[in-house]
Length: 321
Image (cartoon, rainbow, N blue to C red; front, top):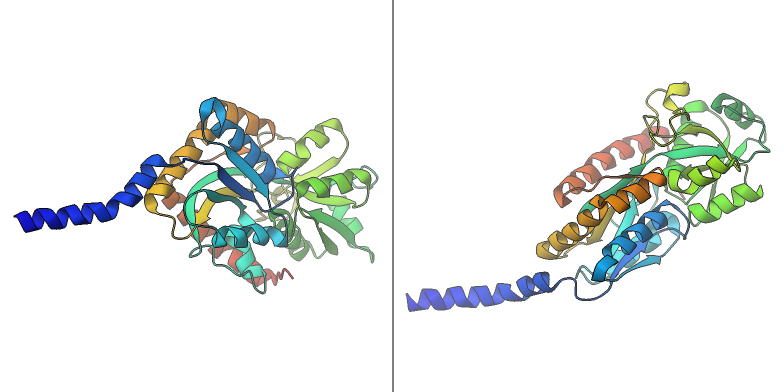
């Protein structure tokens, strides 16, 4: 009996460090990696969450922009970071379900190198043009794109939902669409407004304000359904391309190997913020829907969308260099 008690005590002592760490978590600043430049959709969401989590004496949260390679620069930094919960990433659909299939060497596997924490947000992308472009409908835009010189469209980066949406539209329409990647939605929008790029597939957070001010013109949204925040803008699917769907979403992930109690603590922290009325209202003003989840629900979504986009990428012959 004494021996069993002693063994039990040793076992509990072995478990204590993880338990204590989980109870104390977080005890220092949390860093959220964003794979795109300031001003885009991911950056907007990250800063709204950081402000909410730090409210009323909560833990400090730093949004750390690491743009490049369609989010892969930030992803590689994440998987090299200690698996202690203090570095997480707000990763988009490109990072989590597209890049490993569309890129020659993404350098990671989202289903083995990342620990799911929670879904974060969903929003449509919008095909927008500079006012100088003589197209007021998607059909007119595609007619312009079928000329010998074609049409250039920008996106927030290689492998982003905007890029993939453009490649899917090119494959389905036969139009000559040339991709111009940027290091984030903010720089891309700046160039569109300045007239340096004629069109852009932008996130709703990046585009909504400029659309309402009349500084850019919206032609269609890339989601399967119209956005509740811009219901007058038609979907690409309803304009003659049945089955077209390139919805953008972001989720929170940590490095693989992060202890389950720490993942659970991160989940509670971010889900609470995503459910806060102030956060939901701030996101809604940008055309973004808050969609928190459990880690298991996020893992299932990554697996499901990876299978979907792998087929799309393969069937359409989409390659991201």
